[in-house]
Image (cartoon, rainbow, N blue to C red; front, side, top):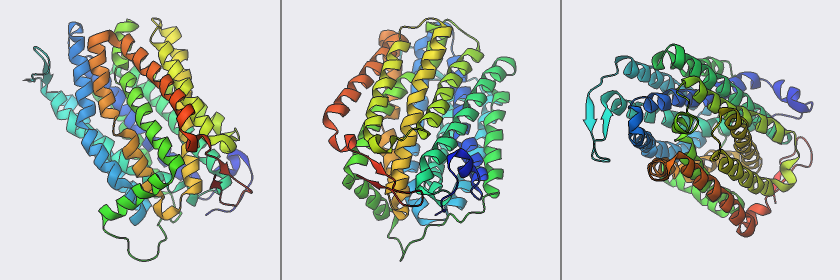
Length: 443
């Protein structure tokens, strides 16, 4: 692990290879979100305005199409990160993301218009190009899932334990800023040049990731004694460790429901912009995504400057409560100039939550099991996201987009209250950092 250096973000940036490592992560983490904006908008305009319910179902199907591949990727990502060279794993996963983005562009360019009928709603159908899009998107999001544990477990190789909060905040804040700028640019390109040209933005981001990873010279191999067991048993060891760590296990349970409820809202954002705000231009959809992402970037930077370590668990609970309140407020908005600042505030919370959680794991979990802990958390955290996306589509059909948003926000507030009252180990989660070079411990 790196030795102590000067404080602040400047000290972190002076670490050997860290700027290249940061650039690789920022570009890779931003890539899927910019591609997702293109796909969500393409689906939102794929049907006549009178068929809003078809759009909601098609969006739900897009989430379901990637559910099993993503969960499988999350399950194996940790064991792979703990068994193999993390540098090679990241390069391989990102290369597949690059190829998948090119295939998405090919599909949207040729856009076969044949209609495939499905008995989900009366008269419901999928354009053939959309049916072909689903498995490619699943491949892209799965490789991004494989990338994350290998990347997150590598952060302690560059910085001291006292610098983890700043390093994580900086990485994900820059990723959020790149994503915000990228999604705003996607909105402009969608309006002026269409979906195919807009996919050049995630393609360039994945290409930049590949170049940046080649500039990283730090050894990212795992140091372990003996030969690891077969991969299923190896993965089970990570799950067992997470269950034994009651505080981290409670974080995973909370994330399970937070991500479900966030998915209810996010998958219907295109319909919210189109129907609730009455805006048809892709630039406004891009602006909403960018405002949320900019909020996340500000939250990441802000929390990394706050000494959250002594009350890490309580910070997580309060942030969930605030996130639910902002989402509930959004359900009452019918004006873009009110929606933008509210979704910015909403975006602050996930950024802060992410920094606190990543720092806690990186500081308190042994390196040789860390990848599996991150992967186990991802499986637990994201396994209900497809359910949330499907639920969002059903709620949009039954009670409208505004009703779906109010349900998600109110339920998130209720979850925060339950966490405050019953998650005792999480409330007591603390990270002790005695000195810059010492490894902190959870208590």
